[in-house]
Image (tube, rainbow over the protein chains, first blue to last red):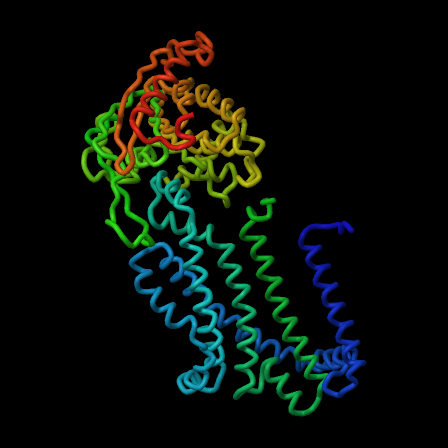
Length: 256
Length: 268
């Protein structure tokens, strides 16, 4: 079947169809199991409406969104910049690459206790945890992407008398931008996963807290409502990054 | 005149290749002169260092010995009036046709209105006006090449270096592009140095053909003068179907063969 409308509309339809399918499977599973820990999507939706109506959801979603955005803001730009420099300069890479080999494979979640000791129990430690985890992901993909910039494009622009700054801004950054946005997408998924963990400790705000709190109160519909809210937060951020890509990389959409 | 004297070039070996020396000789002992306002061609098998010579003349690759001068001035880095057209055209995929064509002016820090004033006539001349907002990915090979030529022309070059500019085009587009180059050249007295592995192309376009051979380092073997291709006498006859054209192709092919190794596709 041909769907009318542009790629964006098609994607939106795909997402809606996927949501409906998940809801149907969920409803069937809930009927078959018939256990309290898996209420149907209807009662979870009702709990979600209730959370929206009394404003609770916005407090928690706002707290989670704020933490993710701060973590991204503090890690994306420096990680991308450092990665691009390392990918283009042998000397910088000699410093950065060994650091990547040591730090990237480490399970950084394990540092949560240390981070909490250093940065306290508040928001900062949560932001730092999420930030350092996505930092090395972005760093690695920025470095690898910068290495792949075709030599010919560099020479081509160099032959026009470009300075190193021109080359960085007019060749390396645009050439790697699609990869950087992909690394941002991947990091968003990681960030939300880590955020859940971080929000189960020492806080009374955030969707992670809401999930665990509902769980401990054995309020399963509300727990699922909070899980749905966390998923929607992730979906919303994904859609924003996709939109940014269409806006920032218009040349990609013409490629057939 | 572009004068190359006792030139030797080397390139850095990729970091991945662990064994052997860091630097590999590309060409050695190259001495030749390219006449002003003429088209000259360098022919040779792949790997003989032709591209390195172009890069050195463009100021992108510093000689390890010897020197290069353009109109009496020694080459020290990139020179504003030298334009280079690369094998895959070197267009930036994220800039439109107009954005690519105006790039030399953007880098020179020229104002937008002035850029437009200089780019518009070139786009019109090359038949690109209707495509100005296209990205390169949406263009055919022949059109991409025109954009590369437009980019070269907006900087009003007196020296145009072309590295295998036609090799990625199909046979018909390629002939059209060769004619197109001659047309463009007619209205501008530029010196053109063309690197190619196609003997036919060199004999059709150039009034001097330099034959290279060898590998690491490549050297200059022979020089063929083709006065028929001077602009004063060109277009008088259909050179491509003349006996003399075939003889020259044969002679150059023989020069390439006798120089020892050739590889497939290099000698057609």
